Length: 323
Image (tube, rainbow, N blue to C red; front, side, top):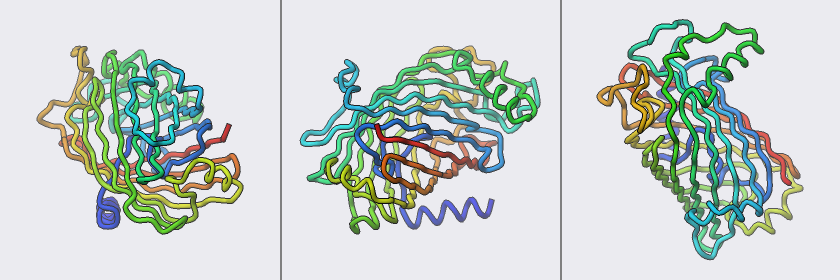
C-alpha cells in the first residue's frame, strides 16, 4: 500500500493528470502509422492478482478504407487535419476478490463481462499541434459477452482453479457510447520529451465520465504531431521511449458496478451510496518500434472504485505491425 500511494503521488507531482481508458488507442503516446493492426492484452496476472479488472483483450485495425463506413459520418473531426480511421474490438472481464465462492460476495465487485466494437477517427492538426479523437461504441454487457467461458478456458490452459460465482454476474444489457478525446502540445524537446494537456468525455449506456489532465513521452520517438510522410520516412530508425500519465476523473455511471441502464434484474450490484465517483488511475509504459513492428509493455494502478474496495493494479502488452 505504501508503494501504491508513493507511485500515485510521484506521478501526480510529475504529470498532474491525464486521460485514458483501460486499453487506450487514441493518445499521442500510442502513435503509429496510418495503416496497421495491433493486438492488446491486459491482465492483473502481470501484478500477481486475480480480481477486479481481471482481463482485457483488444484487436485494433487502422486503415484508410475504414473511412467508407457510414458510421464515420457521425464522428467529430477537426478541420485542417490528417485523419486516421480505425475499428477496435474489445472484451473486458471483471471479478470480485475471490472466485472460489458460489455465493454473492456482498461489499465486493460484481462479476461482469462486456464485448464491444468501436469505430473511431483521430484528427491530427499538425499546424496547431493538437489531436482530436472520437469514437462510437456498440456492444453488450452480461452473459452474452462470454466472460465466464473465456475465464474458465484460460484457467484450464494455465492449470489454475476454475472460477465460481459467475451465475451472479451483471445481466445482459445494451452498450452504446460516444467518446471524444482532446490533446494539445504544451512542451516539446524534439524527439526527446513531449508534454500534452488532455481531456476526455464519455457518454452512453455503459459509462458516463469526465477526465482532464496531462501526459508525457520521454526518450527517442517521432513527434506525433508531425505530418504522416515525415513519420513514414523515419520508421527505419529504432524508437524507444517511456510514457506516463495520471488521470483524475469523475464517473457518473458505470455499468460494471451498477448494472445495465435498462436491465435492472442483476442479482447483485454496488449501491450508489457505496460508489466512489472520484478516482485516480496512474499508468506508465515503455514502447519499442522498428520498421513495421510496434511493441509495448505497461502497468496501471487505480484507486478505490467503491467503499469496501481497494487499490487495484494490472499490466498489459501490445504487439502491432504496419500494413
